[in-house]
Image 1 (cartoon, rainbow over the protein chains, first blue to last red):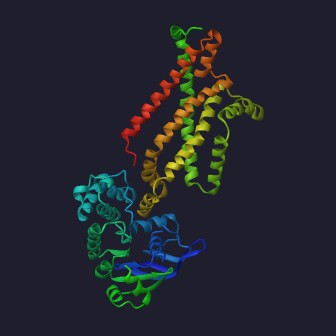
Image 2 (image 1 turned 180 degrees about the vertical axis):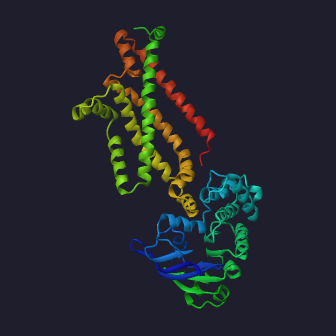
Image 3 (image 1 turned 90 degrees about the vertical axis):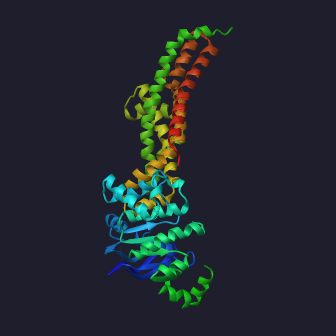
Length: 241
Length: 218
């Protein structure tokens, strides 16, 4: 069964249609890479999955729950779909450890000691155990993003959503974040990734979706699509990234 | 007329009593004003259209009229309209409260809206309810940012109590005027009154500076 189902999903901002009756099923274990020109709706598509954007037409079902079925259900969806943002969005008043322990304590109701032990293990996993007591302002961009990934994982989601996770990073720092993501994919995490990193799409992605004008224009196997673009528009786009 | 500073000790007890009244009005007025300001500020920042409009009407009404007119209205007009008579002290405290409340509401709203939206989204994306995002993420960050303007408002309100001379509350300025009327020592008395205000606002400033230093503004 698909873990994410778009059913003729539309999203409009006033007169502007950002998502135009999208149909899309994503299965458990898939690593879906979303690409497309800016304004094509890829970020909006991602943000609709956890209800940060409200859909305006059709339906969208995540782990069996419709995003339209009320706030309590929406919170349920959000616990199952962790998100990583372009700008990291770590809580600046909390240390790395507190950032990661925060979700489990507040959302899953874990005791402090348990949440912190688990947070430390996650920071270790992203290679930042030594930075646990540092505040976000004391960490590099790449380190902040890895803490943000650990923070999202801490809530134990079934799906991870990445919204241009490396776009705000220097080329050197990108790699450390991509490595963590690669490791996550290898462990079988279901991932939806909006990115411009074509090498990541090729090596890690199991599926590549090219979006244009709020619609899915090409959907297929990443290696094939990148090496032999089936449409001129995709070919043109790939030459520019 | 020669200036004679040695007269000050003779009316010091009166000035201290006046300063106590000033502090009492400022303290209770600001307790009300702060509570009201936080409530209305939240209404302005997060309320739906109706709640927001109600809050805005209050803010504009209070910001748009002088505090002297407000206290005159409370003290002289309200009894005629409603039959409820309040004593000058209560009118003074209430005036400071509703007046400061309007300014504090805007300070609170500004601080809440200055917190980057991405931080709320990060909280919501974990599955937190909105109120928890406010209490644990946005609130603590906004609080740090509102301390400097809030302190400013406290000092302004403290000095605004001098306007209650118009309804005969025996606060510091009124006390100064009464002493003046009996001995005509304008230079000595108004200097002393000014110094009293400076001591009160100075202490307030100092406390605020200490709080700011101890709390990192993020």
